[in-house]
Image (cartoon, rainbow, N blue to C red; front, side):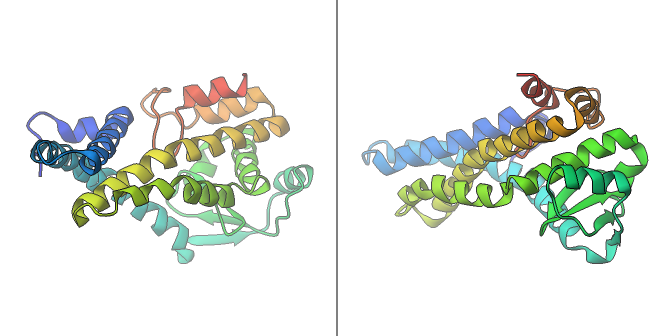
Length: 243
């Protein structure tokens, strides 16, 4: 595994573009391995394992913790308290034609998400946001439900993941790393698209300025231009609102 003498850990954790570039190089080199003559194969193998070491490092310190965090919060039913939706949430749901019987409140969560057609709100998030900001966040989650984004994400991922069969025939470890890299690359625009789409719809019900303030409440370390694998940057999302 790569050392951290050059600050690779900080670079990979904090820099989305670097992580994306590494995944891209993994896919390109694996593709060349399928097409290359025997003369180039040793060189490409060295290049692949050099680049893939960074990908494995990234996968271990970024994707696995993110995946575990998501699974933990989604399936930790004991941490979710189901409450009667406040009147403003019911009014919003009616305006957006969303059926809602209960609202989930989860401890130690500073975010919101949709699971099995229900909106789950973090208690930390509720405490720090003003009511109109909270309404904007809930409108965003309702938009995911209304637009059936989860189903669309699964269908699009399945459709665009068909090319991964081209890596069949490569050594197993190379095949697994290349396919994982490819899936991450295609998942990014799909996830970003659904976030932009949900933002647009939510803003129609709460107003662009209100939704903008809600987005700004999620900025970290005063940074607005940091993308992630699942979400565009706040700066891009605000620009999308007014485009």
